[in-house]
Amino acid sequence: MAVGLPRHIAVIMDGNGRWATARGEPRIAGHREGAKSVRETVRAARELGIEALTLFAFSEQNWDRPPDEVDALMELLYRYVLEERAEIMDNQIRLTAIGALDRLPSFVRQPLFELCEASKENRGMTLCLALSYGGREDIVGAARALAADVRSGRIDPDEINEVLLDARLATASLPPLDLLIRTSGEYRISNFLLWQAAYAELYFTPRMWPEFRRPDLLEAIEAFRRRERRFGRVSAQVADEPAKRGP
Ligand code: IPE
Ligand code: IPE
Ligand code: MG
Image (tube, rainbow, N blue to C red; front, side, top):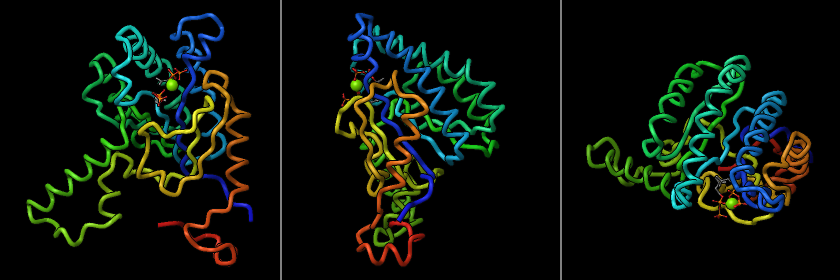
């Protein structure tokens, strides 16, 4: 049975470096072209009526890359925030960011926070940038928050459940993750939304991120709509009660 549109799509935007290297260009050329894919994907998702789009732009582990590449990525991020401001505001997009944002250089953090603040009442779509993000780090942060609540007497350890932990993750304000896309032919999650991906549909494409455009997003969504999400039950139950979501 066909399912509707995914409410929340996340993308591991991978393959920039290999795309550039294959063309005899420096890796940064791939990141630059990848920014165009970001633009097109955001626009397409907004037009389709997707509620939330989370983009893995920089992982906590990416700080270990050569300093020149890290610097170039920060510069591109800065430019993205400046150049997309009008598009974000005109299209009623709410920009948010998750990850260890205090690790970002202040020339990026300042305009980023400013645009997040300026766009926070927008209701068209949430665009969430994962920057200096790690899925394990996210879960550790939630565990720490729960521990603090226990210590202060706000909650009892026996009350801790999935709902309380989920509410302390960086993604707490977003709908449940429905579809996780990874480009570049790699079959791994690379410490992205580990908890949140529990019942997400996974979609892998060999396409490199700089080549990923609107038709590729549509294809991923079509694949999603052909899936049967059972959440641990059997087909007959799902057919009877298609609207029920997973845990
Ligand atoms: C994804 O492309 C962008 C970031 C991780 C910032 P890569 O830079 O990982 O490109 P490949 O995987 O080396 O080709
Ligand atoms: C994941 O890609 C991080 C982002 C897309 C931002 P990586 O290229 O860093 O992942 P690995 O190293 O191939 O696992
Ligand atoms: Mg990569």
